[in-house]
Structure formats: structure tokens, C-alpha cells
Length: 508
Image (tube, rainbow, N blue to C red; front, side):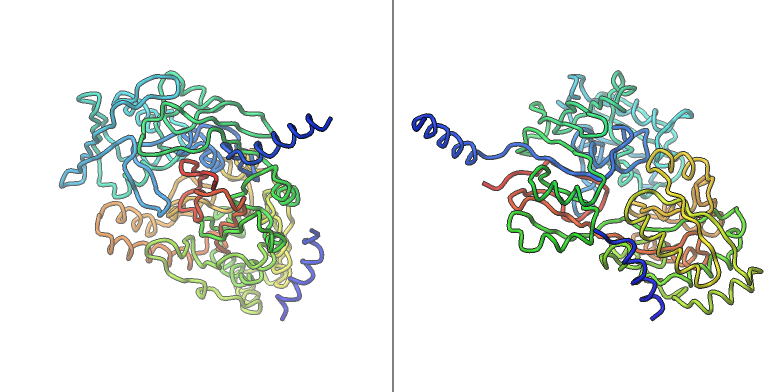
């Protein structure tokens, strides 16, 4: 009952929510309306800070460029499976230490430069080098050497078995880049994909055009043009969709407005799965969050169902660890620290904080983060803890202050990477969480190719996090997609953050 009261109070504050000439003109208008559309305008809530996924961590970069402009040796399909791409095949030595890739021939970058093994070597060496700015540099850490015996062959020799290598090579951070243009990819990206970069009007949109020389003739790209428009305000997103100014919002940012589209025959509402894990990360080396009992008490003070209802209008799945129900080896650990304000307060007193404490939440401006923060603020107040909310601009300031400097008490963000439980083993990483036993489990996952054994290890890793609570595990966001009913081919689910346009087309 108490949590419902909190939600009710918060809801009121948060959710506002010549005849011949005329005849010719009419004929022209009718014919124009009948002509099939060859372009699409895709809406996004947050504009990326750059357009090169090999040097920037923001998922929005990949949502514009991955599989549209840039491609990798492998790729991840709509079912989340690894598929060949610029590498048409590969073999792995029995000891798991040598990967030999056969590269596709006849592939060229948008600037006309040929893709071959020397380009692949440049890309991988750039990503694993000492001065690498790659956001997933760890993906390449086990690569000891890169050899190019001929233009169509690439050999990677590893220092240790790495069971996830083929999957990691399909990621946005692993896309192939052309050496001469690589330095400028942040603003003028050049790739091998089905679309070429045309223009970036900062603060407004990114325009792409169909690549007439695309290598993959098995794919029939239907769109001649595509634009990504950036609209942060949820009401403006809804208005743009209803007015037809935007053809699709694959990740619609206002769940409370979803029902307003019911009965609209021009628009389709598609609710799918994502990997977006909303967690409230804590600085595990800063008091009082360095005390595990404090973190556990805060977790018990959180009614996840109320958070989902208040923050995302009931769309979402509560989680008890940094893992989604879509992922292999998933365990439901929401019962590890079930909601119990009285026990939370008692545990807090046991940790030496009978009168609670105060701290600051650095919350990005996105709706889910702001709303979740306000709900958490009210819940923590129930156990005597005062949480101040400091809105932190995302991505630039959040990346600088939280992700890079770890200068924060608590923050909240949706982690979009699939199977990214290993972030708690990274050093450094903004949680500042250190647990050798957890790190050992993640190392064992990579050391084996046995899927059943990997799933078991993933389960053990989830359990450690659920018990230690390095972050408050809240919920998985669904993919709330709203788009023109005649627009087909967009991914309904999101196994990897993306807006893949290869199969997008208009129904005739």
C-alpha cells in the first residue's frame, strides 16, 4: 500500500503529459501520392556525439551507423546470432588459439578503396594498440598477432582461448575502417555498408543515401535515402509521428503516450525485447557505498514493480542482477533482496547508519532516468535516506564525470550491451567494484567453448552480483516501436542496439 501511495504522489507531479490547370494539378497530385516512397525518416531521442563506433562508447553511434554505413568481419543478426559478413568463412584451430578468416573479395569502401586483409589488420591493430580509443578495447586483448599471408586471408593468433571472439567481432566497435579516412570517421564516416554518409546537421539530423556499389548483391536495398532525426521531447516525438514528419520511432521515448496511438490505422505499435538494463550504479569505493550492507539495504528499499509502473508506465521486466531474461543462462534473482522497507532500515542501522545518510544521484536527462530517480528518492526517504537529484547532461557530461572520472555517489543509466555482465570485472570501470571470485568466473567463460558450462558460469556470476549489489538492479526496458503501418523491415526486437535499414521498405 505504501509503495502505491508513493507512485500516486509522484504520478501527479511527473506525468503531465483555371479549370484545365486545376485538373492538371489534381492529376499531378494524385499521381504523386500514388508514387511509392523511396526514403525513410527515423526518429531518435538522443543525438550521438560522433559517428565512429570504434572510438566512441555511446550506443547512439551504432544506432545510426552499424550495418548502415559500417560493417564487420562478422555481424549479429536480428535473432542475436553470429553470421559471416566481410569474412565469408573461418576456421579455428583445435586449441582455440588460431583463427583463419577467408575475406570477401570485390568489396570496396565508399571512397573506392578496396577492402582486403591489410585493411582488416589495420583496423584490428588500431583497436588493440597502446593508444587505442576503442570503447571495447578488451575485445581485442587476447589477440597476440595479426598476419596477412595474402589479400584474402587474415590470421589472428591469440594468447588465450576467447570463446566470445566471433561475437565480439560483430559489434559496432569492431567494424572495419579504411586507413586513409579513419581519422575523419567521427564526422564523415566511410564504410563498406549499404548506405553512404551524406550530411550531418548538428542538432537536427544525419542523412544517408543508398550505396549503388554495395557488394552484397544478395540483398536488395529498397530505400534510396534515409534520415535520422533527433527529437528529445516525448510530446514532440508523438506529434512528429502523427503528423508524418517522422516515419518511425523504433525506440519511442514516452510509454505513457503509447495508448494515444490506439486506433490509429496509419501507425503500428510494436513492443519487442531489448538488452536495456536500467541500473542505479553506485561508487563502490566511496562511503557509504563501500559497505555491502548499505548497498543491500538500499536494494531492499526498492519496490521494482512500482519503479516500472511509475518510470515506464508498466512496460518493463524487473531484474535482480545485471542480466535479461533474453540472455542464455538467465536466473531470476529478484527475490534475493525483496522489497521490505522495515528490514532495509534495520540493515542500515546494523551498518552504522541508524539515522540514514544523504547523497547525490547524478541522473541523465532522459525520461526513464529522471522518473526512476524521483521514485527512488521517495523510497529511500522511507528508510531515512536523503537522495538529492542532480540532472547530468547525457552523453557528454555523464561520460566525462561518471563513466571516465567516476566522480559520483550514485547514477542511473540503461546499459544496452547484450551479455555485458563482464563490465563488473573491468578495471577501471565506473562502479569501482572489485571481486576476484567474480573475475575468475568470467575468465572461465572465455576459456571454454562448452555452451552448457558457460551458462552455468553465467548463472554463478549473476548470483554473485545479486548478493553483492554493486548497482541497484531495476528493470529491462522493452522496445516500444511506433512506425508507419506501411513501413516494413525494421527490427521488432533489439538483440544489439541498432537501426538496421538493409531490409526496410515501403509496402506497395
